[in-house]
Structure formats: structure tokens, C-alpha cells
Amino acid sequence: MYALAAKGISANESIWTKMGLAVSSIRVSDFQTGDSLKEQILTDYAGDNRLPEVENLIADEYRCAGKYEVASAIYKYIIDKWPGNKILLWAKVGLARIDIAYNKEAAAQKAIDNIISEFKDHHEMPSGVFSIGEQYWQQAFSERGQAGHEQDPNGKSIPTEVNFKKALAVWKRVIKELPASHVTMDAHFFSAECYYQLGQHEEAIEYYQKVVDNWPYYEYAWHAHFLIAICFEELEESGRISKEDAAMQIIRTCERLLSDYPDCRAVEAARDLLERWNSIEIEEKN
Image (cartoon, rainbow, N blue to C red; front, side):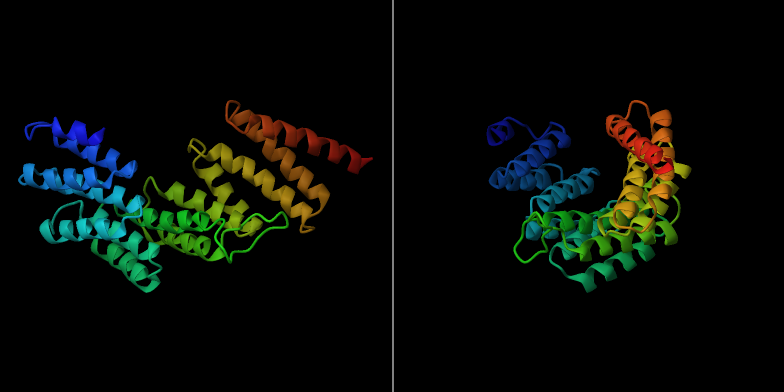
């Protein structure tokens, strides 16, 4: 389908049209058409100032599809061809993510350091570094089901801790070392998520609470509220806090969530949790 569509596009049509077809082809694993369109774009739009961005987006799709060699070649072409272009940051971010995919940890850490140093005045640099952390996060979950990984009592594969720790380390740098930006709240929220995955509930609560307090209109603020309650429940289940303390914290958190985010997706679950812990609190008092 995409190959036929591509034949009907003239060189005079928008570069974005061909890029869209190339991206769509790659997403459905029609790499032959994707490769053809990639080359056509380079030929037909050689002098177009949008070409570096288009090529980088195509490289990103190849990377997401696991075609790391093709993606790497495009990123390196961008770096060599347009050394002063603003998209250079994202080409280097893409290469860093490929280093992580190949488990080239030393190269990935060096790339992060270089990106922070080289692009310190680039307003998108914090977003780029945050994106590198996402690669570790995604790999942690992609490891589910692979042989040799830990399993829970029900036989469900558990992601190894190492990539959560690496993602956390990157996002901590976004928080502590980089200028505040729109990804600062993302870095706090996903740091909390890493701590939760690592079973470090106290630390998770701390970072979820920072999201709730500092960015109440953040798209995942309601989720942070709910996870605070879940963390307190799991702390009580593990014996790390008393039932009385858990009840107080869970009830307070659920009541605030229901008040502040009455239309969020956690409303029903929060009501159930609140009802259960209200009952527990009454039983404890009696």
C-alpha cells in the first residue's frame, strides 16, 4: 500500500508527505519501501532546510523498530552533513539511545556528559537527556519474559532492577544538574515510578509528593496521588509502618484525590481504597 502511494508522489509535493509515508512503512515493517523513500527524500529535497529534521525523524523510526544500524547511519550522516544544525542534539541523543540498546554503558554515559556540555545553551537539551533515560526505562520493561530474569511467586517475569536504576540516575541529573524546563516534572514523576518499581516506597512517596505539591495540573498528578496511597498500603503490608499510620495517610490522600481530580481515571479505585481503609480505621479504634 505504502509503496503504491509513494509512486504517486511527485518531487514537488511536501517533504512531510514522503516522510509520513516513510515513517508509516517502517512502522509496519515494510523496510524496502521505507528505505526507498528515505533515499528519494535525500535526492528530491537535497537543498531543503527541513531535511535534517525529516531525516532525524526517519532515523528515530528505524531505531524504534530495532533497525539500529540503519538509524545509526542516518544519525551520523546528519552530524557530518549539518554540524551546526539545531537537530544535531537529537541525532546525538539517538546515538546515545542506540548505545544503551547495545549495552554499551561507557559509551552511553560519555554521550550523556558530552550532550550536557555541548548543548548547555540549547533549550531542548533537558528534553534530550530525559529521552535517554526513557531508553533505560523501556528496556527494563522489554526484559519481561526473557529467560534468566527473576520471577514473582506467580511465575511472572520481573524486570531487572539495573535499568530502573540507570533511568533513575539520568532523571536525577535532569532534576539536579539541568535548567528547569517542562521535563522537570516528568523527571520527578518517573523518578518516583522507578523508586516504586525498585520497592523503595518511602523514596517513591517523596517524589510523588513533589509532583503533587509543585505541579498539581500535571497530566499525571492524579496518578501520583493514587500511587502515594498505594505505597502507604504496601508499606503497611510489609510491616514497615503501623496500620494506624497507613490508614491516616491513605484516607487523607484518597480524599484529596477525589476532591482535586473528580474526573480522573483513578476515581473508582480511590473510592474503593478509601472505603476499605475507613472500615479498617473504625475497626482499629474499636
